[in-house]
Length: 122
Picture (cartoon, rainbow, N blue to C red):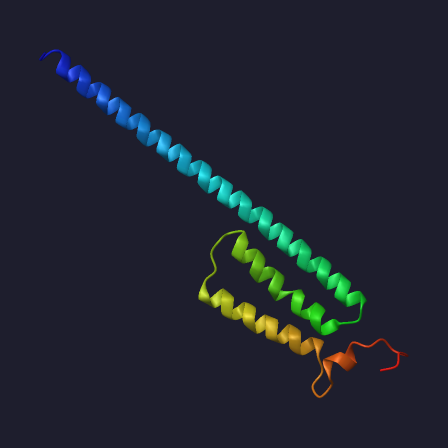
């Protein structure tokens, strides 16, 4: 019995180490799937927003195109791809977004009137 006990202890340690390695591999696989899902979601969202920019830009809605493009696309891509956004980057993105919207609209002009093509009747 005394000779069998050290062998059982080594076997138990080996089984524990094998279980720990399997758990670590499963965790790595989940992390990889999450990262890959974030890349795909970021790409699809960015592509969809840029497609929307082209569609609304062709229809003459510059203020909506400015809202969908630029800082919005960058901040959403930064949110999905590396999965971390610090407060300074979020503030900077908000300032860039406001300036893009201000550039898309002129003060004192109704955005709905601004987006009408020339020569059309309102």
